[in-house]
Image (cartoon, rainbow, N blue to C red; front, side, top):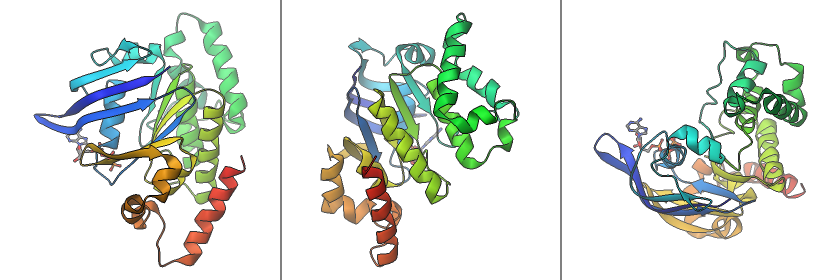
Length: 261
Ligand code: ATP
């Protein structure tokens, strides 16, 4: 599975928000998108999943052109988008939310059951709460449910938009560990995260998006070491304040924890 974008542009109304994006995601890679609020990262993910129409350029997935394909077709091919803000159905049970993620197996209930069994093994906390209303889960559990729902259709490429938003530090670490383990089990991950430091630390490669364009690309480690990236994204926005040694130590401890996985 390889996703390849060539000079991709998209936007809303009459205006392009992302411009001439060249981007590639290969099998078993974590690719992180870094950029300020409003840079166009969510729009890029929505364009890849088909929620926002491609205006120009091409997109191929496993060699197939997909820029004009409906979202449902892209899900069938293996592209799944876990949107910002989780967007689970809070009035439905955990189990029903998972079932909705399996809609592509709707004619094969055995497949859906098998996949749900796999998902709940991965997220024991969901197994315990299958009959409960999803709105009663904690923020971290709701994020796990959103990712679990995405996994129900057996994706090849999982796109995660701000998965750590609003979570306590311990849960942030858990989410990042989960992302690494999904990659290690064979998924490709495209990750958009305000927490640039952590997202680059776990990334195989990254793209810096500025004003809807790719400003810089490189390995996660290269981007972490880049002065430009440090100045712009690893400051307050990257959740590290250079004046705060204590905060830096906390982040570096979390990173070391992550690297030990
Ligand atoms: P954030 O992390 O804040 O979501 P982002 O990098 O993901 O930032 P986008 O959400 O893609 O950025 O937004 C890029 C630009 O597109 C912004 O100027 C935003 O106001 C605009 N935009 C986003 N969604 C829409 C929409 N549905 N209609 C019109 N403009 C939109």
